[in-house]
Length: 76
Image (cartoon, rainbow, N blue to C red; front, side):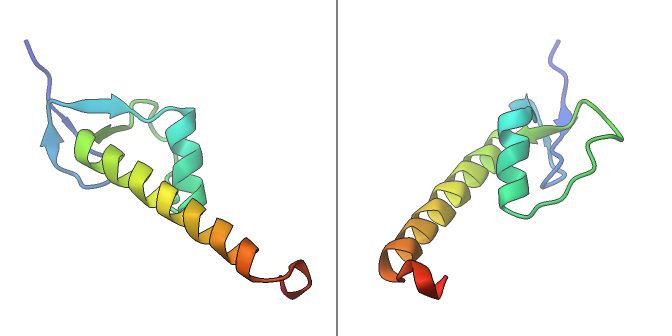
């Protein structure tokens, strides 16, 4: 029997989901997505949202890296 759950981010039902663990919580925090995890310990995200989160995280890291390379440390 397959259980469907609702994605915490897009609110769509999915059979393919993963529990939001600490590594994903840290990425959500860096991306400024504030979720109150104290309300429920079974927050899940669908595969599509998980892929998007990792893509956005890589993009933000690349932007910060380039910003640090282009601007002298005295301007930051």
